[in-house]
Length: 225
Image (cartoon, rainbow, N blue to C red; front, side, top):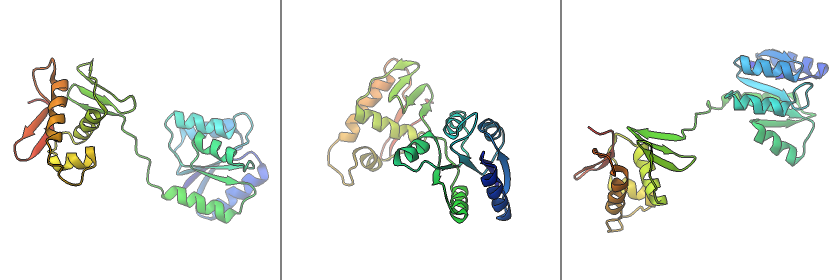
């Protein structure tokens, strides 16, 4: 594994670099926050071991900066500040784990190895698009052709499920379970009614519909033919 160690205490840094190297890892060391930030932003590492109290740029500032720029390297934050508020602050700044000084090297090594085993972070999808229909999952807004479409919460949930399965047929049973959390047939036309209302809102002012009914199968949201 390729590790970045950012630690300004020379004795601690030398000890950790030697021990991590003996454990089979390649280690780059930065003795200041500025140098650590430059390496973290410019190189690719499997795990970063970051001291919190650093000259020039402190550890939390490094964390916030690299996370804001999209760097997803797992970070183990080292600190002498062991209070709950301090740990929360470190985690909220972007660290993946937190180790309070003094610590045993065996524990640090175990935590580094555990971080390296984590699956890569997946980008969280915040926008769904089908043709000229767009749904912003963070703002909870829907537009088609740039025109804002006002939806009720259940209609939004229904459309989100349809857009998340765009191009695929979804059955009435699938919609009852995913949107209404019904694991039985309520013997009503609740799905059909909501689909009809949603279709009317989406297609208003447009010549081609997006939600298609497949008789005996279900519904499919796809680009117009």
